[in-house]
Image: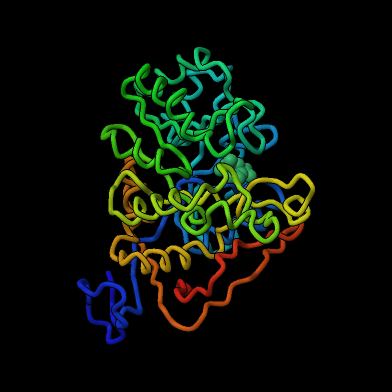
Length: 365
Ligand code: NCD
Ligand code: ZN
């Protein structure tokens, strides 16, 4: 709901209406998040828990979270790292390997622990060496997941060295995603962190059992931001940002109100030395300022009234979970101050810089 300064409901007030200063949303969820472990987990968890009620937790630890028992132990470590007074529910995932046991997956789902299984093509990204190369070997797991309605979260990039990095998502859709979905009717799939107009079009063309997450940073940067005027390691992530036409397609999809698109920040902390390196890690850390950035984007697109769907309603609907009852309120005012870096026991992590001042702020509480 959008309010003006007098507190009166102003539902028809669309940007650039100067009267829109306050926005109350159901508390958002993050449908794709990296929290890591140990000191890094403790350092970054409050950044998400401050604004988000729940998050789908990525399993790409070293070693990866493969079994239900490992997911339960990781969930306990996350809850133990949560500062007193903060509420947050980690929604756990299992990392799909060629040895994953369908019965273990089914039991972890039945107990309520696991909300999705994550598919990384082997070698696609950070800590994905245990991922899948031979899809015939995971057919049994995928069929079980289709039976029980457990979503498969897909990192959608081929790893064939012959395929250009900027084409890997589009090629994955044709070579892997579409064949897997056809071979496994009823399998519910989340195309994660889509970065291309091709990804948007594939989702729009399929009504059933398909959704997609979009990150905050892919709504802001294109590939020029990474490479023009000097290399910017803090804008390097996987899938890598594409050309401007793709960024515009993502913005259109995210702000369209289409329920198949929802927020998955892919906030992925790496310490500064690991980013600012001759071989820097992939990942943008957006947990701290995501809601401010998204309010800015949706206001720019004249779609503030659709922000709640993207951050708080469409994801729960796909995952068949209730939307959060609690709310958050954002207000618009002077430039918002947020830290340039988060200090963790592992070292500093640079917060994503959108390249412009932010004016929407989440009220504390
Ligand atoms: C992620 C990470 O660092 O774990 N990096 C990234 O650029 N998104 C891995 C991933 O989700 O691909
Ligand atoms: Zn990720």
